[in-house]
Each structure stands twice: as structure tokens, then as C-alpha cells.
Amino acid sequence: MEDLNEYRKYFPVTNNLTFLNHASISPISSLVYDTINNFFKERLNYSCFDYTKWTDRVITIRAEVGEFIGAKANEISFLSNTSHGLNIIANGINWKKGDNIVVVYPDFPSNIYVWQNISIIMNGDVEIRFVKREQSGYIDLNMIKSCICKNTKLLSITSVDYMSGFNANLKDIGEFCKKQKILLCVDAGQSIGVIPIDVHELNIDFLVFCTYKWLSGPLGFGVLYVNDCIIDDIKPVFVGWKSVINEELFELNFKLQQDSCKFEYGVLSFSNVFGIKSALDLVKEIGIQRIQNKIFHLNEILRDELSNRDQKIISSFNHVERSGIIVVKPNFNDLDDFKSYFHNNKISITVRHGLIRISPSYYNNIEDIKRFLNVFDDFCYHR
Image (cartoon, rainbow, N blue to C red):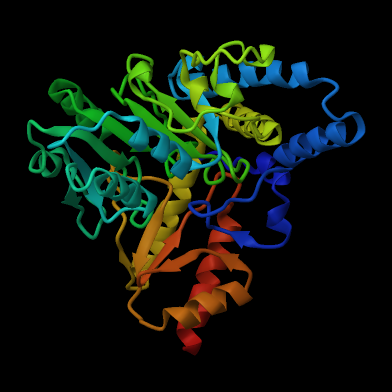
């Protein structure tokens, strides 16, 4: 197993914390920091003197982001976060009375609220149907099929469940949705950067993701993919000067752009666009497979060690169902004390709903895992 220790130097957080919480808000690398900082230095000293250079860079980065997920540049738009992208999709579809939307439950709140809001806007004429996942996070195609009917217009699902780490079988789900002519919307925030994804190969119509988790990219930035076969069908609810063709001519000629750029209705956060470029460059330099192998290896050590301590592992370790997340149901209940104890010992994890979620990244090492286990043992001994 490659240790990838040469990349640890890019993450100064390792000098201050044992950070095992990349399913939450990850630290940025020094490379991303330098890129963003250099942009602000340029703006400080020269303002927008080289604005055209900025916009040219955005064109290049849009293509690179698209390539990373198997999409074309015209299918990619840059937004503020995942919820922003989900709302563009939900409010841009032409819903009709009797349509229904199938949603996995429980899930991250944004993936529920957005669709519930559509039902409210449509005065209940669009039904929300819930597929209930198991406690392990397990969900399969047969469970989804049980909620599908001829009026199902869209299925919304996360690629990886945030509280179990279960990795959905998007290949089978995508093939089914394509045959049934059901739109497939995927939130890939908990998989992007760890699990390879190809939107066209998986028959995904919409993909959204934030960049501050496994990519260790900027906060307040998200990516939306819309299959170019249906871009014309998705009507932007918000528009602005950037939504139209030849926007910089200021002709007051309201003709929407013909690609996903129509969803970018104002000035982009250039600092974040350039920051995600640096984050992606690092991921591509290392390689997704090497990243995945390292994270899976660390999680296997955690699984074995915690199982030996009589802790119940919720997350699946089946190769096609696993992710970068490992979730544990502890054999004790004083989790508020546990959370405080780890915080005081400068170890970052997530404690929620009676579960412990651990999510290491590729720059973590065996010593980080040992430190987690030592503090875990200390807590159990003193409680």
C-alpha cells in the first residue's frame, strides 16, 4: 500500500489537529490557499485590469471540471453550493399535475427539502415518494422500483450517504431510469474525489457537488452538470446580465445562452474557480485509484481495530458499496462527553444521531489512526 506521505506537506492542518472529518468541511491544501491568495493579491494591486485573463481561465477550468466527471464543458456551470444546483434543477423542470418525484429517505436535508418545496409550490399536485433506506444506508434498485410508476418524472439520490457511507449502485439505477425515461439527479458531494464518476456512462441527467469535502477545495462553491440533451428543457428561474448571449456587449437583447452558462447569472467567484483548479490538479496528479486505495486501507484498519473493541460497524465494506466514510455505532451512550473528549484532544470527527463518523483522506497516515484509537481507548477507560 502506497503511503502517499509526500502529499502530507501540503496540509498544514496536520501540524495542529488529527483531522479525520473529510465528509464534513475539509482543510484546503497550501496549493489551494496559494492560488486563492494570489488572486486576491492581483485584485488588490491591479483590480480587474486583466479581467479577460480571468474569464479565459474560467473557460479552460470549466472544460477540465467537465472532463473530470466525463462531461463536456457546455454541460458545466459554477454555482455557490450544492443546494443552489438542486434548486436550479427542481425549479427549472416543467412539472405537471400528477407527476411524482422519488426521493431516498433519510438523506441530507437539502436533498429532501428542495423536492418538498416543489410539491408545496405546485399545491400538492406533484407527489413526493420516499424510498426508505436501511440503517446501514443500504438502498437497491428493487427498493426504488417499488416506488416508481408511469407518472414518476425524477429520481433524486446521493451517490454516497452522508451518515452511513453507503455507495449507491448508480450504474444499475442509471440504466433503469434511462429505460423508464425517468430523470436521474445525483448529489455526488460525498463521493467526488474518492470514487470515479462518469455522468454519461452512468446515464446521469443532473449531477451536483460541493468542492469542500473530499476534494479539499473552496467553501461556497459548487458544480452543476446538466446533460446537454435536456439543457433547453431546464428553464432558469433567476437570470442576470451573464445569462445571455454576448453578455459583455450590453445590448439588452434577451437571448439566453444555449448551454449551462445560462444558470450563471452574475459575476463568478473567480477565486473559488481558480481554487478548485488547484484542488483538482492535485487529485489528478495523485490519481483517484491511488487516493481510493489509501483511504480504503485506513478505513480497513479502523474497522478491524474498532470491531476488536466490540464496536458495531454500520458501514458496508463490500467493494461496490463502500466509500471514504466509516460509521460506528458505539456500545456506550455518553456521546456528548465522547465528542467533547475528542475535541479537547484535537481530533476532528463527526458525532451525530448516536453514531460516530470517521472520514480520513489520502494525506492521513497510520499514526493518525493510532492516535484516534489511543484517544478512543483512553475515553473508554476513564468513562
